[in-house]
Length: 188
Image 1 (tube, rainbow, N blue to C red):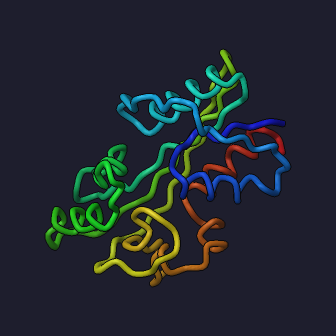
Image 2: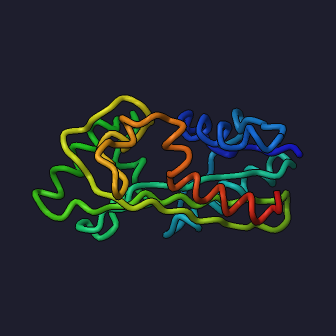
């Protein structure tokens, strides 16, 4: 089955391709397709917007991901604005510094959230949500992964997502949990 990965984030695309590789999909790129404005108020809303736009524009079933870091002491921020906290240049070093600054010694519990939306061209859309809970650590540690990975340690772990082997991250991450639900939903 052809599947369009509806993302322009190279790190997300790489992780999605790695998670889909064993399933035998013919992965297509969203390169060249316009990216819709993320005007939704939830991860689900934004994932649906991206999947629907890509599927309808391409005529191919599309998979979109909306994900981010939700910090308890910041009332769930940066949440759906996780990428925007990194600014137009996608500077996650600055975004991580902002999280640390805004926390100012408060509770470091946080979670990564991923919502996958699978849209058929001009047809149905299904969503699958995954979460991984943990805590934030400062200063950032590790160069593996992307985004906020260097400041997030999953519950029961001392290493951050930026330090652990990518294969381990793929098996326990919010994206892996959403993918497990997607695979079950597709009956694969």
